[in-house]
Image (cartoon, rainbow, N blue to C red; front, top):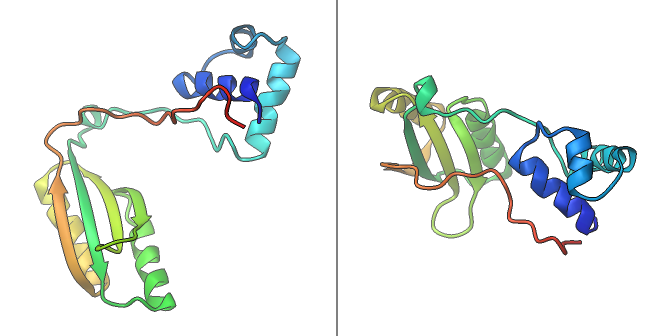
Amino acid sequence: MDATDTKILMLLQDNADISIAELAQRVNLSQTPCWKRVQRLEATGVIQKRVALVDPDKVGLGLTVFTSIEIADHSGQGLQHFADIVLAMPEVMEFYRMAGDVDYMLRVVVPDMAAYDAFYKRLIDAVPLKNVTSRFAMQRVKFTTAYALMPSAR
């Protein structure tokens, strides 16, 4: 990946609907080489997919909860079982296995506290957990899906 690829990624992260013609012009390429670069970035998995970003408040999903979890069973099967349970829960927007004092961190988005309570009950009924701590977001101060790429990235 060279500086031109990085510029293409920066522009696509800002607006995935940009036309190839405009993208090519902004990175100083003709359309065909620019299109080929985008195709290569997609084929190699650098660009995973293009999506629409939805405002959660405008679709009735106004509560964001960061949930840290310590699980009881750390065996390979226990870890996989927990992952399978959480992956099947559509309220979970992000799911990370952590190092440190907690095993997992979830970002859960739901309409309200009653919906989070229902999610929480389903979670604790599905798998034995050692500890669950929920932190409720009061305000989203910054949100981005764009990575801070440096033009000289390789």
